[in-house]
Image 1 (cartoon, rainbow, N blue to C red):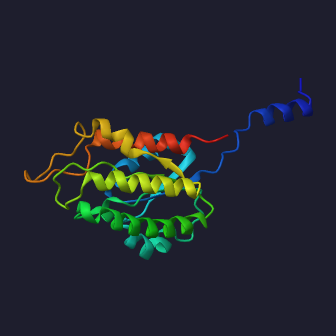
Image 2: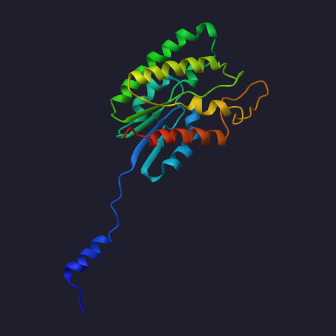
Image 3: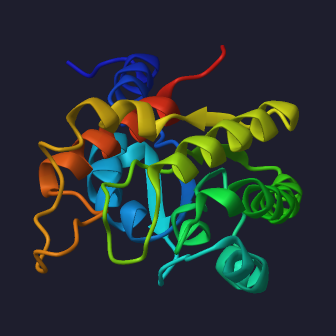
Length: 210
């Protein structure tokens, strides 16, 4: 007995696979720390996001101003996760903290204003803590001061913040990468440390105000 044509149409329609949603394009801009957490970030975001990272170390804000257009390219990014800071703090001296922080903020604001022009969702990741002494002469007092000022700047421009510093600080010694030189301590992290950071960034990406 032949089934009615209408019945066949309904069965065929119900068996069609759902239309796949377009993946959101996410760009990570940052230094070597961002390169460390990117794999965990991409894994945790899954198939909903296409995670890319700039093909080099983003270094400091001066470098960012020079290369941002190249990094953005022609892609219409949905989300940009970004950080500058660690390389702006090299060879720090406490008596020079405030003027260096103020110059950093001026350059960072220029970068934020350009990123806002992309109309992408922006997420600033705070700079991670540094152990002392380290090869580049960074001081953790710089990190704290720069982060506080950067968070205030992001609030002013309505940019979301992932506070990576606060996430990793309580366990920083556990996940500090062993230094190859006994004289210095390393500002980088082990795989476990980067996984913690990647989870924190992914949580921010997946959190919405809706």
